[in-house]
Image (cartoon, rainbow, N blue to C red):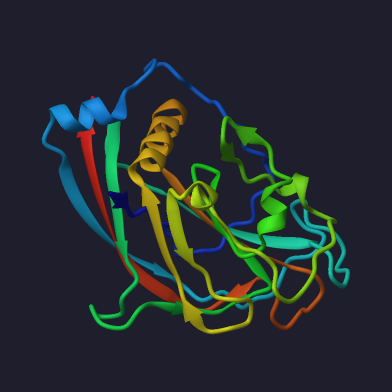
Length: 237
């Protein structure tokens, strides 16, 4: 059975220049997420999420961003949200609903490209080739701005990225850049378990939304507002 995983966005865009690395605190030791969830009755909490529109342009030459250059990854804006579900909580399942008012699928527009992350793990990306440049924590690609800044990119029919999709463990619908389209993500329970284990090791639950661009001051790093509801099921260790 596939389980859903989502991204939470904060109210304010944050520029981040300190690199995050895989690992972190691992005081809890090995955790079998599936066993913990099967042996307990998970608590459930629903969280409404709204990403405020961002259209202030890319902050070139700030916080690790470089000078604007056509068709190169030069600047980004990072939005993050840290979720507190209690010390030692183990995530069993995360579901999200992009439908607007319970009806139409949520749509979004962004420019030029974006990454969605969970504790720095790339869940989905509009520009798939960049994900291959990121460091790895096992099989998990870890977002790292320094790995792609200054790299060239192309426009057109570029492959997207969805964590686990190549292995048949996920399906994602990702709209093309500068196009209003639906977004939907679906992940196998094995991916949820791997991400939950990482959250325990790092002792944080943090979602990220990163937009980046090249040299268009009027639209790059922008995105429209979009909203959805996240339902998290979890147990205490």
